[in-house]
Image 1 (cartoon, rainbow, N blue to C red):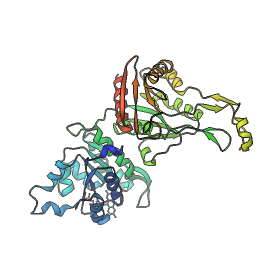
Image 2: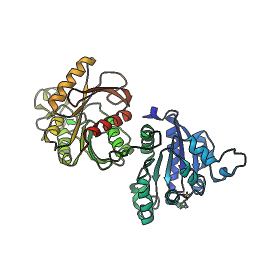
Image 3: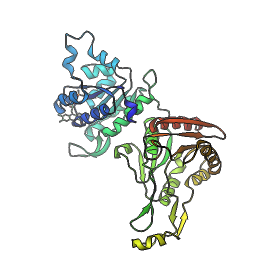
Image 4: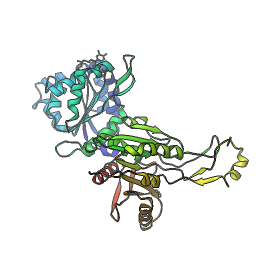
Length: 419
Ligand SMILES: Cc1cc2nc3c(=O)[nH]c(=O)nc-3n(C[C@H](O)[C@H](O)[C@H](O)COP(=O)(O)O)c2cc1C
């Protein structure tokens, strides 16, 4: 995903919230990902976060209201910045700036720049819970939801700086970076973002499952969960409600923000969670790498002495039930199902194997991804392969970031989920 930000022009703005202390982390992450970053702070933000820190991290002067009135400027600064940016990130967004923005009030550098810009804007508010619940703030936030150029990242729950536990925490910098990459990928020539999954419910499984060998050891695989979690986030950013059933993940915790997460360990637990959640889903993606075998019974299997391990692995094992096949056999009318098949071998063999799996499993689409090639597949940020189905259709997917592939897969699922 980091490659997606390379060379892109991102304007990062901070308002007067204590969450502005996290703005330097956002700037630093974007710069490390290769983006060109310029910073703007409101007068209140400048009292909470150091403009010098933002200037140093962005390698550019940090701009404030006073700079708008610099007689040496040949063009209005807010217009120059609005035209320069591919994306504006307002993090944190305060109640005051939100109110100015939706009312069309351009008083101040950030306020006027928000009215002037025609690129997408990522809005990440932060405030005390009572402020967030205030009717005026709710109304203003509601007005932003219908602006196709705005990507609203609602605040999450947690301990706030005012010592209250509740809603109001700004989205984590890691999620903001992910959302920024997604917005830059998604925006059309008018700066508009897709919200085509709004009103739809997506169920996704991700990551590995762990099957116990004894009470402390387990059998698993190298799946990090990256593909499934990025798919889940991409769908959520396009408006979907997402249930994510996941095994142990090797990913930043912030990537789970905004998703309805169901954490599981073993394949039986994953199977049960998927069965429970399947009926309300418009689309299901089986992306998890389920461990293939499990003990017939784990009751009373204490930690085995290592001398007995090999002997104990000779019997008492069975194949894990085929979760994808189970989902296909139970699915309600109109529900679209995408499976993943991690395969190894030459291209022709993979395609043939994939086609027979697609028929045998009974899903609409099957993403065949080779896992025996360096720099792609398991535990990598890139993926490639073939998207098979429906029927005999197949499309080659070039080596690309898993976030790019996620949006491509969401487009295809949507084509099949039209009423
Ligand atoms: C220490 C401190 C923390 C604040 N935290 C927030 C906050 O989290 N969210 C918010 O909307 N306002 C917060 N405020 C109030 C804003 O700073 C104030 O409304 C200001 O007018 C915002 O202006 P701006 O949007 O131009 O930065 C805080 C004020 C102070 C003094």
